[in-house]
Length: 490
Image (cartoon, rainbow, N blue to C red; front, side, top):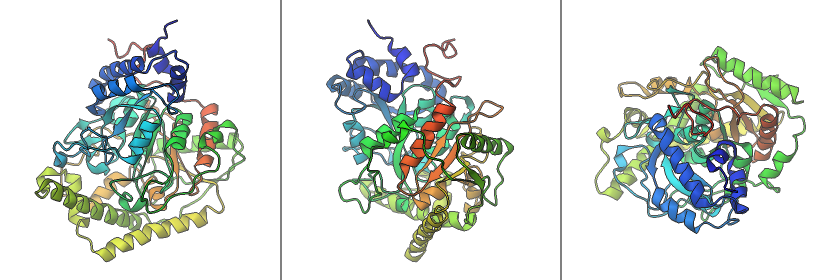
């Protein structure tokens, strides 16, 4: 009996699709063509694809063999941000890179290929990943499938929009300050940021943003996130350090409810307020956790946000200046300010020429925060916060065009929107956004959990329990590729 592949894509996660392929009921080429159709259906509405790689994907699907990798034959996309894909454009969301094409894969991309995935494109990112909204001069705005007048989040907004719209069950992303979790929250899907050093950063660099950045993925199901982490985690050649890996596969953490977990609830980080909708979202998540047997205690975190963010932007500014210097050397002429967006110019003006001592002090500062939070978490298993301080932002609100703004004004604009996520990039702790709440306006608002360093399994165990208690996969946004929905076919 011929399978209805579009119907399978409506309902299955990547693990489920791989099982259909393994049994021989679905061919990788058929699945790929169905996903291509879905991209072409929603892309005019979402603007989430940076480059289509259909021909190389067709070759990979033809060569795919069932069982060669946990996701053998399953299509996905790679985020266009410091994640080279052999033969593909790597723009990092910026005009400054011109027509550059990579001639090698990042190690993490290689591991995704070895897991059996068929890479059919790259997804959009804001310039250099420094925005919580995926809007760039190079590609324009990536829109939220729940309401196209709102942002899909950033910087992995293209990935989140495509997963939420049911184009693919998961898509690669990376996270240096919330860039997996913020778009996962905006789009109503699952986003996990692993511990510092758990996933490879090579071969281009030893680490991103002094270790604050890490790759992983945005997924429809918790299971896919765990299976993918099992397939891609571990030290790569020449890595400066590595996080501990769990003795048991991460996917085993999903098989039983966790023991009662001590959860610290943080509703606000001064000086920025949390909106009524965000408070209701996080309090609903707290009530759900309590109903599942997990004690929740309101607390305050020992963090001075303005001083912390000044250190973060010292690292970002110095790293961006270094990257642009290298880019200028590679292409034979310096990157000019007019090639860069206003946001990047503001960061470089304030932090692009910091001293070595200032940079070293900033790195010491984020490491000190990691020590503080590790001590704090001796009394708790998890920290629960909102992912965002308010609903997903309207398109244009975070798309800065005026470089006369100060860095403090830039920080106010972005981190009053997402004050919580960057803390755990700095500390190196794993953290996740779980889609448990939709606002009165119908926009998703994720619950954000952070665990102890190296304890991804605790997060997965709770996420799977929450997924069973309050499933989200049946919630389909208005812009979607599902066969059963007529909304996109009018």
